[in-house]
Length: 279
Image 1: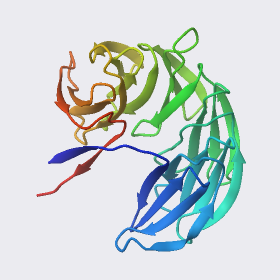
Image 2: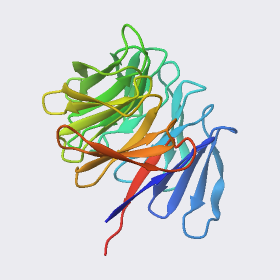
Image 3: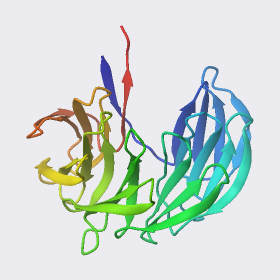
Image 4: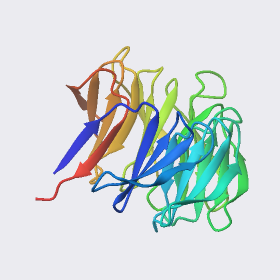
């Protein structure tokens, strides 16, 4: 059975690795390392860049990558010894997100004000590619087999309202997919068949065939609903979407025509995750 959780994020982003929590503290430019069992601080807060916002840990658990929008860089932390390995990898202007490929070989970082995606080689911790995309790339994800990266181009005008699809083999944009207004979050189903894109300004969700990389449907979530973050069920049967302005979670069926129901939650839900509960 699965449960979904909506929660508000203020100035920190928390990521769990083994029995340790890595917490990005946007207000004092540090990462806290916390024992997940006792709640004790493992080491003094680690200095990173300015306004750290998102943390991702490599699949082998050896490194944590922290994106710092205020200083336009990425900090690398030794996730086993809790030390800063690389204080600053410069990327583009105002990077809001990052994602690590399933094999752990690369980190992809969208640069909101540069209209590019930076690619970091995790073996050297250097930027190896800078890929032009649409206007204001905001959120990014990778498909389950690691062959493609999807980034939302969030500008609600010419040059935006699209998703760029990047081949991880060629490091080139292989498709540009139109969406509704203001795409922000994007996730791919675990089976790799579909990508769901929340479109805040358009009060809708655009559904993409992730095999052909074409938009197959745009579903309205209601005027003024403001869809933001989303998460997929492990069995790929449902997508759960926070409706920030509607104070609801929309629960989508992932079969055409993608019907959904809503459930009331707290005020302004902005982030969602899912956990599996084994009986």
